[in-house]
Length: 487
Ligand code: CS2
Image 1 (cartoon, rainbow, N blue to C red):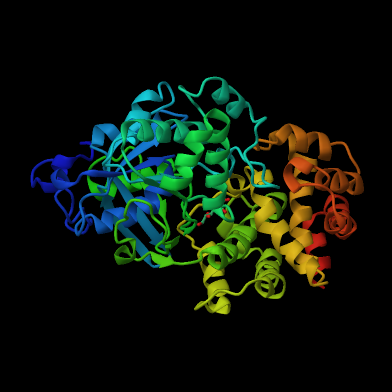
Image 2: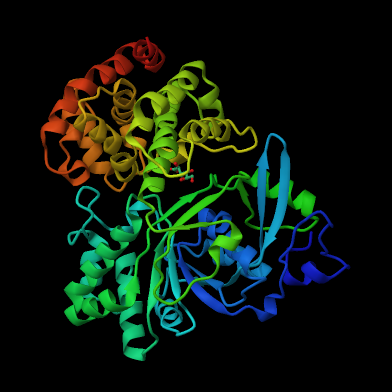
């Protein structure tokens, strides 16, 4: 079978695409680079790159150079197809295929970071966008500051000219921009972190200050770090997806993206060197993203993590299966309505409708979103997804029987599956949870200051509220524990 390529977009001959496949509505030859994106994984390709693809017809100066810091696989897959790939947006009602042309070049920085830094230092680049996952910021989840003891940060501080960490790479690029007079730039974090712009700023200026205080001052004057709320469910692509999409395209796409029709992007309008009209592609530009971030992290991501850990314990491999479980299907809407919604106040959004839409999105039968995928990196996710709303409620004297059950699901999962977890803090979590009684495991996990910050009254009170759920899950099984909490 022919490979997807630029030639197939226009030709009528071999490799031409069927008429029902949407293709870029602009001349790719006219597009120039404006954005360097770090972390060119499935989420970026199913989210921001689609927005950019939509707006390139009106404004061709925002083509994307995508970079991987750790792996060559995206470049290997997409370069032979001219950076083109398919986005399949599907739900129970059907599937829409669209070819995205916004990514003009892919850099594999895993072997050599110098070419990436050189591209980031070009004056035409005005935005560095990031999807590097929560752990990519090398920050302390409790304080938000750069972890100066992070192994990659330690290595990069010794050798700032050939960095590996995200703060190290961006600092080196900003140093090169300053030296070359390339001008201001915006660092646009698109990761699921509360205050993601502030976390990016703290990590990068924290790193820069240790390397060169004058550079840190230059950054403060020339670089902005808007926060964003990003949302689109983009599961990992499977071989079955590749085969089904190739059958529809009539050409092979080595790495298509499978996602839902829904997408949302709320961006703080604070750009140092201009921006494309993201709003014309459907994004919302606002003065304060915080209420939207809290809504999404707590309602969507908090429910996702709950479905992941309790779903795994109940034997549900996929989210759609977990939300159809009668117990989880009762618990999630109730946890959202009774416990999370009262911690939120979002201008212009009906949270009842938002929650109902979330349940329908989780139940999307066409997305095979693995609970094991969402269960990864819990130490980086739970603080903002589950602990933050618990803390907000405790501050008002409110009890949280379902949020504490969700937290207990994570602890029980680590007690039972600790040796298989994928988490940058896996070693700490295993030592805290494995081989302990439910009460000890709960106290030891919540006592990990690297994850939760210093022990305080809130955390001290949380231990006895959570431990009985953990005990019920371990002793009577997850179904009985959920049933008990729902009574
Ligand atoms: C998920 C998110 O893997 C996870 O932790 O909760 O990737 C989620 O699918 C996205 O944030 C949806 O926007």
